[in-house]
Each structure stands twice: as C-alpha cells, then as structure tokens.
Image (cartoon, rainbow, N blue to C red; front, side, top):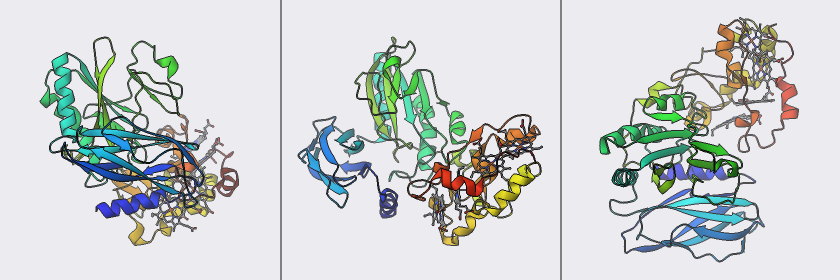
Length: 405
Ligand code: HEC
Ligand code: HEC
Ligand code: HEC
Ligand code: HEC
C-alpha cells in the first residue's frame, strides 16, 4: 500500500515545470535520544538555484550547503539530520530562484507527535490557560489521498469529521471553533457541507485567506490570516499551512484578546478515530457507482436542443469510453464522469460538469440564471493535457449564443 501511494506520488509529480519536495510529509520514528540522516528530493526545472533552506526547529538541520543548483535531470537530493528530541511536525522551507517549496518532517516518538496526542496537548494547554481553540483545515479540496496515514481515499475526511466531537469529550468546557478555509469541496461536491454537520464551519470571519495579508493584520475580529501568495511578511497572526488536502489541522490557542498564544500542527493520522458514515453524505465522484444509463445532460437538452446537439458530438459526451475497465478507478474517473447523486456518477463530462447552478436553473424554467462555468484547466491540467490551450479548444466544443433553443 505504501509503495502504491509512493508510485502514485511519483506519477503525479512527473511533469515539466514542477517545483516540489518529495515526499511532502516524511514520517520518522525516533526515540528522544535518536538521530538519523534523511533525504528529501527537490524537483525543479534544471538550473534552478536553491538560495536558502530553513527549518523551524533545531531538531532538524540541513546538511546540504547553499547555494546549490538543480542539474539537468531536474532533481536534487537534499540531506537533513533529524533528532527525536522534539516530536511533532517540523517545517522545511526551501527558497529557490523559481519559487518557494515546503515539506514537513513528522517526528514520531513513542506516544508523541501523533495527531491525537497533539490534540490532547492543545486542549489541555488551552483549558489550563483559559484560552480558546481555533482549528483550521485549509484547502481540503476533497482529495485526502496522499497521506500514507489514511487507509482509504476518504479516511482522512472521516477522521477530520470526528475531531470536534473528540475535543468535546476530552475538554468538555473548552471553547473550540473548527474552520474549513479555502476550497473544502474540490472534486467531492458536498464534502464541506457534510463536515458542517460534525461541527466544522465553511469559513469564518476570524480566519481570512488573502493575497496581501497586511491590511487584515490589524482588522478587528481577524485572528488568523492565510496568505495565498509568497508574502514574506512575518506576524503572529499569519498562518501558513504547509499541509493542505486535509493532511493536517492547524491548532491555534487564542487568548481573550484574540491573540494567538501558541500553535500546533496536528497530523490527520491513524491515531484519530474514523467516521465511516461520512462518505454516504455527499456526492463522491471518486468512490461512486458508475451508472451507464445516467444522462444528467438530458434535463438541459429538453430546453437547449442546439447546445445538446453540439455537446453530443464532442468527446465530453463519451468521456468514460476512453477509460479501460481496469482504469475506472479513483485515480482516473474523476475528470471523465459527472456526479449525479450520492455515490452515483454518469459516464460523461455533462453540462453540469461545467455549468454551476444548473439544477436550480432548470427547476426554475430558466428564471434563475446559472452561476458560472468551471475552469477548463480543472480537468485539462498540466498532467493530463499539457498542450491544452483554451482559445484553440473552445471552438471545438462551442455551443454558446443560442440559449434555450
Ligand atoms: C425549462 C427550460 C430550461 C431547462 C431545463 C434548462 N434551461 Fe438553461 N436556459 C433556459 C432559458 C429560458 C434561458 C435563457 C435565460 C435568459 O436568457 O435569461 C437559459 C439560459 C441558460 C444559460 C445562459 C444564461 C445563464 O444562466 O448563464 C445557460 C448556461 C444554461 N441555460 C444552461 C443550462 C443547463 C446546464 C441546464 C441543465 C442543468 C439548463 N440550462 C436547463 C431554459 C432552460
Ligand atoms: C485531472 C483530470 C483527469 C484525470 C484525473 C484523468 N484524466 Fe484522462 N483525460 C483528461 C483530459 C482533459 C483528457 C483530454 C486530453 C486530450 O484531449 O488530449 C483526457 C483524455 C484521456 C484519454 C484519451 C486520450 C486520447 O488522446 O485519446 C485517455 C485514454 C485517458 N484520459 C485515460 C486516463 C487514465 C487511464 C487516467 C488515470 C490514470 C486518467 N485519464 C485520469 C483528464 C483527466
Ligand atoms: C466543457 C464544459 C462545458 C460543457 C460540457 C457544456 N458547457 Fe455550456 N458553456 C460552457 C462555456 C465555457 C460556455 C460559455 C459561457 C461564457 O463564457 O459565458 C457555455 C455556454 C453555454 C450556453 C450559452 C450561454 C450564453 O450566454 O450564451 C448555454 C445555453 C449552454 N452553455 C448550455 C449547455 C448545455 C445544455 C450543455 C450540455 C448539453 C452544456 N452547455 C455543456 C461550458 C460547457
Ligand atoms: C470535468 C472535466 C472537464 C472539464 C471541466 C473540461 N473538460 Fe474537456 N475534456 C475532458 C475529458 C475527460 C476529455 C477527454 C474525453 C475522452 O476522449 O475521453 C475532454 C476532451 C476535450 C476536447 C476534445 C473534444 C473533441 O470532441 O475533440 C476538447 C476540445 C475539450 N475537452 C475542451 C474543453 C474546454 C474548452 C473546456 C472548458 C470550457 C473543457 N474542455 C472542460 C474533461 C473536461
């Protein structure tokens, strides 16, 4: 299973202009007195120069001297020495001439550094100090697939679902807020909403995501600001989640004045219990049953016959046909099908794959407008269609300018 995950990661990062560290999370099992030398691989365009390597703990030290240049093969091994003296998640930040990349070393000692231990410690510290707890998962994106900690493609989300309830059990009186910031749905429409039933919120005024964090730092009510860009500004309100995709929860301990007093990164790992019922609560393209007869476009075609006739001629209408039966897996079907209902998918890129708000629009006989179209690049991405150019592709599927005909 580990190897499969690893192979999948390697497949994903095998692209031209990637800049990333592999693995994204490296778990090291160390006793407090132990030390190891370990390697992270930097993937970057050949010729990229590493200007600096920093870590946030003396327990992780870079053994690679900078500046260093990525050779023609596009990868460079970076060596680190880690000791088990402080279990937890430690950031590794690599600054290069083509951007900044991050990874984390998860130092797991006996009984320490695991998700549940971090959660317990944070809840206890907050209770003792009279602070409140603010937990943030940034950019869940419905793709909890890369962490070797979860057993299935949804295990991470199921574990996230249990966290608010767990804290109520561990620290009954504690004031805790759980926020999903950024995209909580991704390819799993409804995942974020399903999580709101367990105590998570879809966004909160106290947690803001911004290109430029500076104006928000002094805004009343704002506790944490997550910068989207490469903002180099340092401030205690700035939170930079290294691990997205639901692989970790940022736990912030907040005092009565709204200042962050302490923070912990809690890995979403198998020390946390799972909620197996979560999967049944949202439309999941990735684990859904393929219904070959389902045609969600039909409901649109009754009024948009011309658009329907154009669409039927495109490969979007037969997108599943390209996948061999053995390829109709989690990894592959996501862009080749459309979610229809909870756990049922249709075998095509349908009108609803691109047009948002289609259902209320159809139900209102066209009175309510659709709410927009998705970015072609969400499927025609750098890995699956590197040569994609929207201006060349759009004419091949163009069906606009003839609404309701
Ligand atoms: C009952 C008839 C009817 C059905 C069913 C219907 N539409 Fe429409 N649609 C209309 C009408 C009428 C308009 C023109 C509205 C206008 O111009 O104000 C329209 C306009 C649109 C537009 C352009 C305006 C906008 O809302 O952005 C899009 C896109 C669209 N429809 C997509 C769809 C999709 C996708 C479906 C299926 C989920 C669908 N329609 C189902 C009647 C329908
Ligand atoms: C992120 C979205 C996405 C995922 C995931 C995805 N595909 Fe595709 N696939 C596409 C797009 C977009 C195209 C159209 C590319 C083109 O026209 O060149 C495509 C086209 C194809 C084709 C037709 C290629 C051709 O040139 O006729 C095959 C076969 C295919 N995909 C197989 C797979 C397999 C196997 C997997 C899983 C390993 C997979 N796809 C996963 C988006 C995706
Ligand atoms: C691959 C994505 C995609 C698919 C699939 C798709 N559309 Fe569209 N559609 C678009 C885009 C993009 C536009 C242009 C909207 C814009 O840019 O204003 C558009 C435009 C339209 C318009 C005209 C809007 C206007 O203002 O003139 C209608 C109506 C429409 N689509 C209906 C449909 C119907 C019905 C289907 C299914 C039979 C469908 N579309 C399938 C992406 C798609
Ligand atoms: C939900 C995922 C998805 C989205 C969004 C999407 N596509 Fe595609 N597209 C596909 C897949 C998958 C294929 C390949 C289908 C196959 O052959 O299996 C494809 C194929 C195509 C093709 C080849 C079609 C043909 O008949 O020759 C064109 C052109 C194209 N897409 C244009 C677009 C454009 C333009 C947009 C944005 C307006 C878009 N697509 C959005 C998934 C998507």
